[in-house]
Figure (cartoon, rainbow, N blue to C red):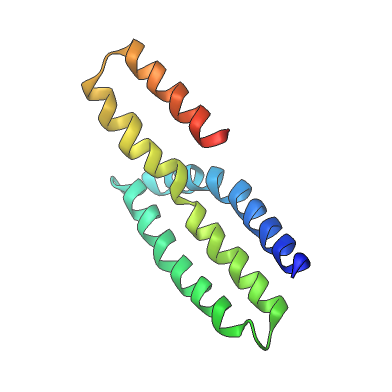
Length: 116
């Protein structure tokens, strides 16, 4: 059981380290030809992650290695959303409402809460 938890944790951590920065990169690439790139990347990320994670759960009894690979891909798609949702909700919308000093404080607080 310990090795399963360790493998799952490593898969989740690596998928997060790759997926979170990959979200804005994909969004910038899509933004060159679509105006609403951030919501599209989030929607497709959630859509594909559900299929990969469901397949990982279905195949875990017979194909353990394939299940780990599908889990990694599903979590990678799921982690595309983190930076984009923060950008959509916190940066773009709050920038209209609050001044720069409060905005800077708000971003620092969110950064500390997420990363620590």
